Image 1 (tube, rainbow, N blue to C red):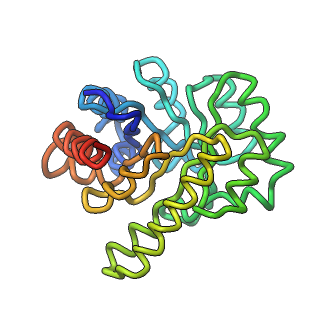
Image 2 (tube, rainbow, N blue to C red):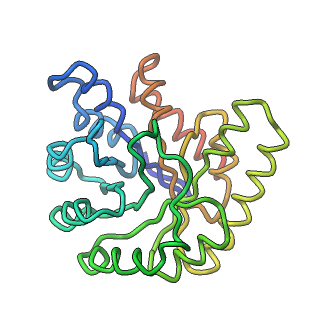
Length: 249
């Protein structure tokens, strides 16, 4: 099932590994989930190799690189260890994200403006190796300008605040966050950056983001893996794909 009008769906399979690791052993297999996602209409697979290896492990990345026929988006912190792993595997895309050991999930976007010199030098070898470099950031003009200056090809806008406001029933904040995402997607596009978005998106929140013409890819994981418990992974992804396509059309 192809994406409509250039809008791609990346499925994050981290939390299949979370379930596996809760008990140990080999099941459920993140690679099997990735292949099912591919068959269900995913245009790419996202996997975050954390420093503490709390879900995805090194062997998962090896297996995904061998098994996938769609692109792998390798999420990672800007550490020397992760850079070496990315340069060894050379995935299609590398997304640089902030990472703290104590967080349950990624909190906020990367502080690019404050670390501009370091990040510029950090991503240069990744670009030279043929990886498409993305930076996960808040919908903030200062951060977008810094991402552009350091040579990132892609930004992924953090949609967490928008999704949290929707879940809390705070429609004023939801509207303000959506307005910010809308304006910053257009701003980044005008700079020549490819715009992606993700974090916390559900069936109830995806369509306003999918409707933004500058957004070329949505990365969605936790909700889809959770929904798969009730309806199965293939139908869960197919419904997200349907909603995205309807919003874009």
